[in-house]
Length: 231
Ligand SMILES: *Cc1c(COP(=O)(O)O)cnc(C)c1O
Image (cartoon, rainbow, N blue to C red; front, side, top):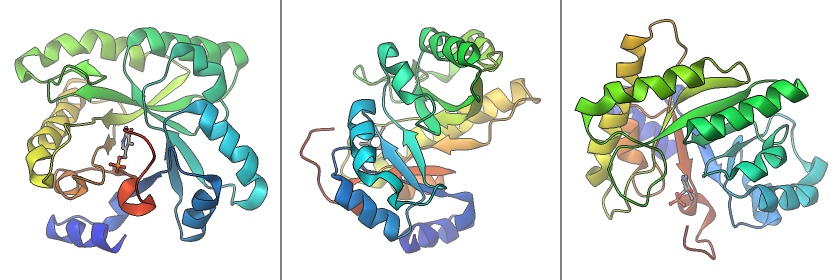
């Protein structure tokens, strides 16, 4: 938090505009308890089964106010696993998935799920999210956007991106800048919508993400150490 705070002041921002999601995927329950004791409030996970399994072990040890955020791509057959367990979903990446989540929430009469729309602002082939590399094509994104904001079971919070793997934080700054401007594009077009958040920046590039306006950072290895997996 001290590092985040220093970056924030360099960017003339205050640290309370920035929330830290500690990414605990592929990390054991003991380490998660440790990081909660150290003050983590938001935990990021990628795999619903793994998360449910670990939280059986973590159980009641922890404060109710700890939030679990699903930060990675979701397969629609796993929707039932995430409802009522995850507080926020950072990686909504298609209208089809949105429709399925929404239908389930309406049917079960549960509270709306907070979501982020994931955009691929770098144009990398293997990345999830709506392709938004070319600004001239942003108007093409509005049809899907309008369908999603009309869904009563989803509460849109902001935009999310996962840029390329790089060695220096600065290399991804242009992509964070692009996501920030994409948010502005939507806000100008739909002044009535609520779209306050930008989920961007990981261990490798959180500094640039802060400079460009991130409100949620998703940091794993830098805090938790390495994982036994490639993602
Ligand atoms: C794993 C993951 C992170 C964290 O990456 P680190 O390099 O460990 O900080 C952030 N966002 C998403 C979507 C991830 O899958």
